Length: 373
Image (cartoon, rainbow, N blue to C red):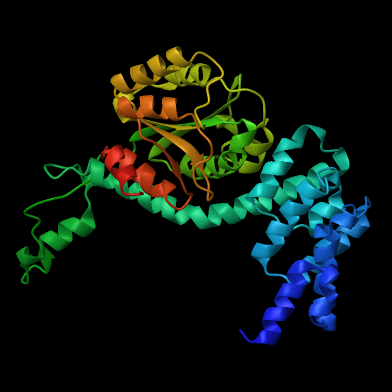
């Protein structure tokens, strides 16, 4: 970086009070202007209270900065300038760069979104969830179906409908009979009964405010898992009450607008409800997504978790499902879970399919989690 570029960057960083450092060109003056509107303390209300001013500013920052920087500035504007009310204006929502954090904000404001904005808010949420689904669907399908195929392979005497033809042909190629132009399958390889649901998955999601991004990711993953015929998927969300949103899994947008972020946390009650959903303990995977701060009966919560594991349920506690790492969490409950064989850790969306594969294959989840460190 030459000296001119270095001075230019310092001038843009320090703002108009340091105009003497270097003269800015027209493009940089425009960039300096949008930065001043947000970060100049003497103009803390620089964007004004009108939606048109904010919409114009949102357009300007996209013209000057890359997408990753735009998202940071949008979040700063919401926090520094109190723009949550302006997010309820449809023209603002149409202008803003949509991401998971914006969806989380809209869900937190769900109950106060006016009718004129609700349709636009749903469009924003649908765009983000569809983008997420495109990103995760193929990887999730491959991991889950692959793990079930490996877990259910029957090498002895598979039924005709259960034969793994690719593997059977490959292994028996040496038994090819040229005169008959066919292969004699000395050994047949197959999978388990595909018409049967091979595993039951329960996603139990803390909908307290601190878990907002995790709720968004969990909803999309739940919708993808629900579309797989090899598993049954239930989606339960909770704060101090418990709501079963399984019926909305076909549409993540409907599911998310059925969530009420905020409130307290009663993990014990949520696990109690999940116990009633377990029909085949040895074929059930329960994923608790929570920071483990229990507002209910902690001792009883741990007893319920131990009972679920003791019955044969594969249980894992995700302290967060997102890209920001582990949030603040109750380390005592996390340690208690780990002691009873329930690993507790944060998980990125990209790793979640591998986690589900490990759980469905009944691999050691502690060992799998240790590989993340």
